[in-house]
Amino acid sequence: MVLTVVSIKKTKPGKKPRKLTDGGGLYLQIAPTGGKLWRFDYRFEGKRKTLALGKYPDVSLQDARERHQEARKLLSQGVDSSQQRQRRVPGRQIHGLRRYIGQYESRPVLFRITLGI
Image (cartoon, rainbow, N blue to C red; front, side, top):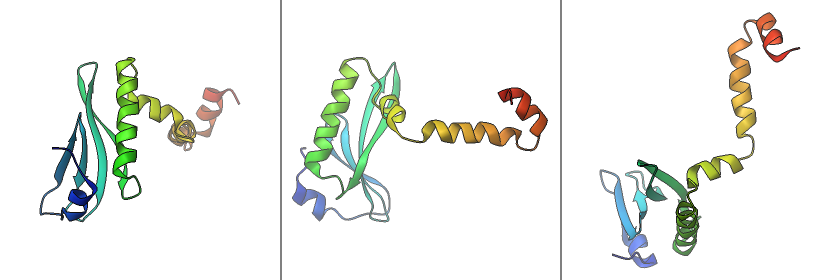
């Protein structure tokens, strides 16, 4: 079943999370709290993965379909869409460095030796 804007607006949250499928792995997940999130399920190197495409209505049906097609194009080229996105997220490396530094804050001498300070 192909999704329409009308069917999305008419669908009310239930007691359990629901999925409204659009085809090709694209679906709208409706939480019991009323949140509507676009998701894309796919397989990469034999593993099932889910890519978050945004929140409805911030990301419209048309935008979700475009993002879905972009992700599928990357998959056809052998590129994992979620890994591609993680590389583009600003501050991701800084967060990892902070976590690494946090391990050694209680041991400043070891920290200086490890980083060569």
